[in-house]
Image (spheres, rainbow, N blue to C red):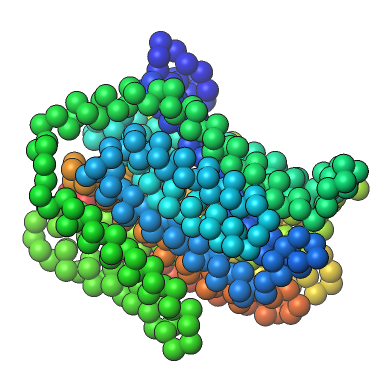
Amino acid sequence: MTTDGGAVTTLSDGIDVRQPAGLRTLFFTELWERFSYYGMRALLVLFMVTPPQQGGLGFSTAEAALVYGNYTMAVYMLAIPGGFLADRWLTASRAVLIGGAIIALGHFTLALQATATFYLGLILVAVGTGLFKPSISVLVGSLYARDDERRDAGFSIFYMGINIGAFLAPLVTGYLAQGAGFKAGLASAGIDPSTSWHFGFAAAGIGMAIGLGVFFRQSQLFINTENAARSDAPADDPAAVRDTLLIVLATAVLAAMMVMSDWPGFGWMRTVVLLVPIVAIVWFATRGTAEAQRIAAILVFFLAAMIFWAIFEQAGLSIALFANNLTHNEIAGTTFPSAWYLALNSLFVILLAPLFAALWTRLGAAQPSSPVKFSLGLGFLAASFLLMVPAALLTADGKVSPLWLVGLYFLQTVGELLLSPVGLSTMTKLAPVRATGLVLGIWFLGSAFGNKLAGVLGAGFQSTDANALSRFFLDQALFVAIAALVLLAITPLVKKWMGGVR
């Protein structure tokens, strides 16, 4: 990536694609925020299932899966009130600053060695991310006109920045938490090596602090731009307080319902989560107005994203446990921390994102529509879990080669690049002008429900029965493959609802 006359430029296959100057600041801010998030995520389940005498919490796999699912759900669910607060009260720039500060505080709280601070740290990171995540995506979208063909390319470049941070994070925090060399260094310094987990959490906090510094240097530019854009808005909105309380209350009730769904006899609530969007799609699609039909299209993408993330986010749960317990983690006679596998997804994004950005730019108006890209993304995700079926069967004879996980992450990354940055771009195009942050909050709600479902599915992981493990992967592959085929079948209808938006 180079800079030329104040505009970000990416060079790929001889194509020179100029991007707005503000993309550079947002690129590096998100890079460090994602370093903090994925650095902690790489350790979370492994820390919870590690016995207390080794510095962990000693949770069972099922217990850790539920905590993981509820936490990652909260991270994205809180994007709804976070996006709303940014729209109505804070502006996106101020939400990024405040949210980033709360995230950093949460990571440093996780660095403290107590169960109470562990849960408090998770709460703070979730609240801060709810403010930060939708707002920085709004700022990226604000750099482009709605019909600017550079939008998908710009979001792909932004997504590459996310994944540079996510690539570095497991390498750093994984070494600090699991690395034999670092543990030996702690012991030689008279520090209990079982505390190494908390050094990994502290490193995540430092990453967020760096991201805050990057954004703060240029924040006034974004704040001034937003103030100018809002100058014609009414100074006082008597409904704002009421609407804010309703959004916060509704989010709290929804989160409580999802936590209750873990209780015996309340599992039906998870079925409701799948049925409500389907009913809403039908209702909005039959209203007859262009705006209502666009909302129907938004909800189709919401449902597809929820299914995608339910399987993709197994990377931090069932795939992380597979890597830790069932994979031969050694290269040329040298062992490495199992958390390092989580860097593979980001490494592939770094390598492939410029190619995808160049491809969409070269194709221009001839590129596949968003529903087709989503269908292809789901298809590649299904293929990644289908690949794990023979890998699971081979565990009956002992630990398997790391190459199985390399293949899994490659296929998942292709699917991710077809869905996630395209989804962000599409939401900013379909959203009403005054509610972009709220619509992105709804988009992240799909991630919230997907992460919750990931925890539910991951609770069924076990490493002692190869046949049961292969069925575990096969069932999820079939689930995603069916969703891909359904979306592909209704693509003409969704394109009609989008009203000309690609």
